Image (tube, rainbow, N blue to C red; front, side):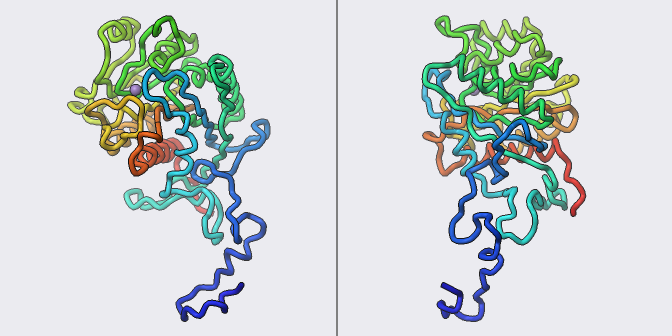
Length: 338
Ligand SMILES: [Mn+2]
């Protein structure tokens, strides 16, 4: 079948560039793997050479209420339309970035990325699953890449941070509607209500600041304060503004950001298990994250609690993916073209 079989007029453009692309899946079939932002698949962590590595953790066994965050990583991979790492038309090269009218330049140009796929999650084997994630995060970080962990419910932040002992002291900034600081839930220590408490107990973790808080019980709140954690409620965030919030957070040698999408207003991020009235809007979250990342040394971050069964029009995956791009663009300035 050639273009001459279709008599559709002179506006027709020969699809030569696509059909001639050698063996890269751009001919009749799109055989590229489903990866975040269409970055290359990493098949061997020990040979990894990239600035950024995505790790999916399809785990929601720590959820009290509405499950579904196990579908988060693949939904995040399928959703983004703004940015493709691979040149989708075969005209240029990969990692060309994307043009940003405000910056007047391409963002993420020359920033190399890979996707390690999803951690294998076994039913009911919570500790075993966490050891797998911690091990993968540790190996990726030891290769010099910045791990981006795609959750999963918020319980996964504990094993992700546990895998980053090389960055001691590691500060944590935690965006969430909830404090996630309950010591235990009916004796269970590894639910999505306790990850920040578990991180606090790790020797290599330093300062912890929770941002966007609006639903919290008295006991964990008072325990977090007595442990020296910073807490910036949603109302305080609104009063201060996103930049002042980011500038008020103490930054040490290394920073981990954990971003629960329920920090956002549920009208912008309905696809989550525990939505709470009120919340940050995209532009506020972006400004705060950008300022924070530019003034610190971000070594890893996660985005958790994206639950596609409750998402509407892919709103939640779109905003979450966009915030991932914003964080990466703030962390890695574009490199010179060519
Ligand atoms: Mn939450």
